[in-house]
Length: 142
Image 1 (spheres, one colour):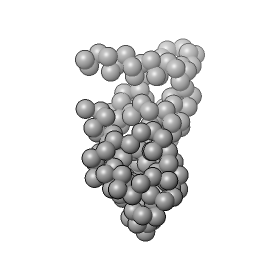
Image 2 (cartoon, rainbow, N blue to C red; image 1 turned 90 degrees about the vertical axis):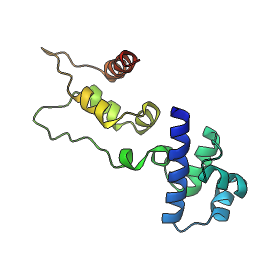
Image 3 (tube, rainbow, N blue to C red; image 1 turned 180 degrees about the vertical axis):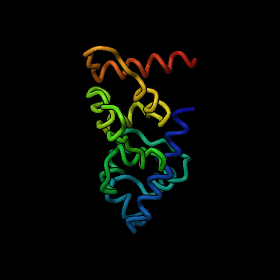
Image 4 (cartoon, helix red, strand yellow; image 1 turned 90 degrees about the horizontal axis):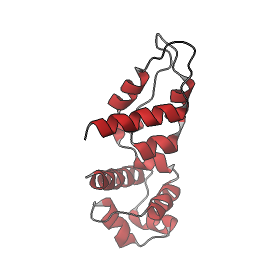
């Protein structure tokens, strides 16, 4: 299920970014050093690209892997550090890491959940603390 969702996001984003940049499939295929018919298959959601192909496509489009793999909703997501409370440094570090955000595919609801964690005293939770909290939360949903 998650693999199918990722495949569809990559397909949509490759097509969208390619068109925004005014690049045709042949040019992108050459830039990414992949076959044009394979690129078409990826864009149409018929093929799941390997991480190596995703890296090549990102490079060929001139974008980061994270930008290529984020849905439109995720792409425009950012956290607001100007809230009524100070965000823990560990959570800031997690949210500022494009690679970890991409790999963990945090939803807006999950980020809100993590932002809602409050600890008493001078405890300063690490990034690992928030990763573990997220994993525990996801396990509880199964």
